[in-house]
Image 1 (cartoon, rainbow, N blue to C red):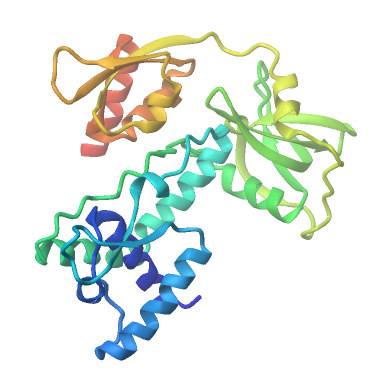
Image 2: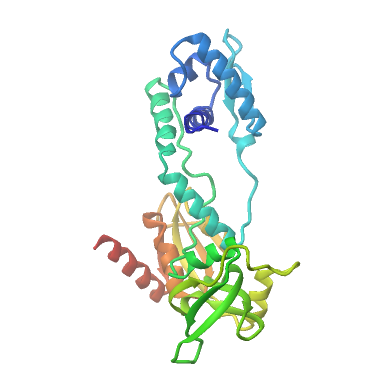
Length: 318
């Protein structure tokens, strides 16, 4: 699919989803960029676009807003379009977050925003759709993450310097990586240690220096039936103790936090806010996570978490 067509279809979906009522072909033609100037050419292209949206599974409906309307219109029902609740593993959420950031920063964002502006200019109350209900914001700041993820994807062995727990000296490790997963807010790589001829798990934050590729793509084979998450879970037999954080979340935001909250209720101290209780173990990682929501989430308790979040936000301002 060409970029121009993708932009047009994206704008069409945003237009029909945001309007909240049936839009006629004339209104759609005026609101959605990318259609031909002549009405006949627009009609032919619009018919093809409608078929393509339906083939993609998008619930495009035809109807009128009132019995007196002479011309039928089109809409996408929010209720039919919304996905059911999705539960993701932390590493799956991280990958979705990376994809979302690429999409958000892409030039297609301008096409969607343009469709909303034209709808409003035409007097149609268009609702923003920038909050889809999923906010994966898991951080992957370890320097080794990118190279290891690429090595897993391409099936390449790697070498790196590693500082094991309780040791001051670095050890050079050779690994056939099988997967990179997150557990309790920490990233791990699991695979076959070539020097020890056994399965090993390494914490990414303890890798010192660059990760180097030690072979061509396709030279690492993951044993059939391997569950990398289970491998890391078996290795991490002593998970960190959980603590409880109390945070304020602006109404309509923080969907990912709300899903993992042990309790969530309206905040009596402020309209438009909720109080949530969240389990966490690592202050540093959780402070990064909370700070990534900006002004929509405020850490209240415990004090060390609140100070850590404030420190990160002050660092951004500086």
